Length: 496
Image 1 (cartoon, rainbow, N blue to C red):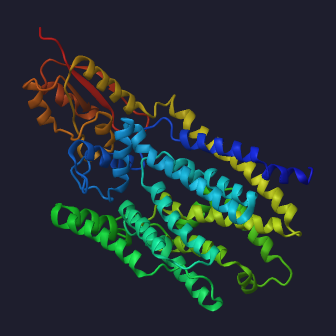
Image 2: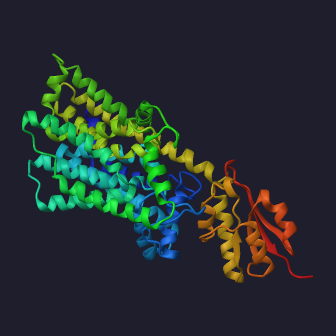
Image 3: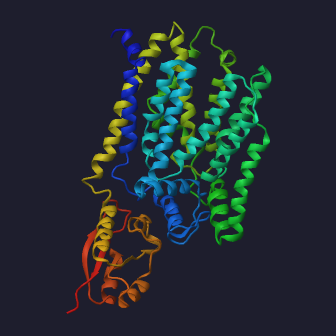
């Protein structure tokens, strides 16, 4: 292969344009067909839906009458998007999609300004072409928005280090605002992703008189005070908040009895796998650096620039801190990926600047980029293509038809809960309802002619048909996923 071909490929504006368009398409399409039946999407979507319907801006509840377990900031953003688009599908997914696009653009700009065009391209591609990013880009969750807010704080610190500028009032207010947003997205998790890295960097900076990463205490304490005011109001005014949010959702994460615990090493293999091939490229370039003449780890760390050392501390600090929390889930480690991408761009730029490793790093980077394109595209197709013939959105389609017919014929309907077995909280959202009803309530409304249609779980159909006069089954849905219950639509037949 021509030795200049990889360099031309990595240094081409056309390559960047193609990668950018492809990443956007993957972000947009990887979760098609859109539905809310997995990854607790319905719980997050219900927050904004209830705000619009009932005006519950600070404390929401889940469909089965429990308290919403996360702060409401992303719900507020979805409400704003709904007011503009009048589409819940867009309002629920735009916060994640726009956050993903914003992180990618910030990585491209930061990587290009600090490590050249190729460093920026690799940082950009590494974020867009991995299994976690394309999966989370349109999921109705808080993970991508949290990653953006944390990345903006870390990026502000990185810029302060790189430019050797002291913190001023504007920077501190910016840090306070971003920390407050992070806390109102997912609670104190932001501290686990940033403070360990800040402490590790500060320990090293004292020896070499590096620029400070510390903005002062008040932005961190002030943001925490805002969050604690919200939490205190919930404890005082919202029944069940202390037990379900404080004890179970937050403190329960540090217990091995409330949530399902995972071993300390849980996140490391998942990051290595989900971040392929970029994780392998990081390991390979690091190995090349260690193989230099007279390899000494201490000497290598002494040569590392302050801003690169911050990226290392930021990434590894978040990984270590989150690994020590017993309750784990793969998407919770996602905020370490943006700094890892920027770190990879720096490592590639350093490898290209060294004559001994230039050709090898260039070829490996180009190969990683091509492989990532094929790998993530194949993964997306593997997720999308079976979804349509297997009717992954069966409940969505079923409920959309019910709503359309109800509007056309001015019919009223309700949906019956299947109790503890009900894992389809999205059914309420598909039917644009705030509450499930019990079968007894449904029978009473039916007999009083308050409803003309009823959505019932299949396992309750026999009992319902006995209690509902003039009832006939007009539509049935049975999702392919075995954990989702089947439903039937019962319609009032014309009187004899």
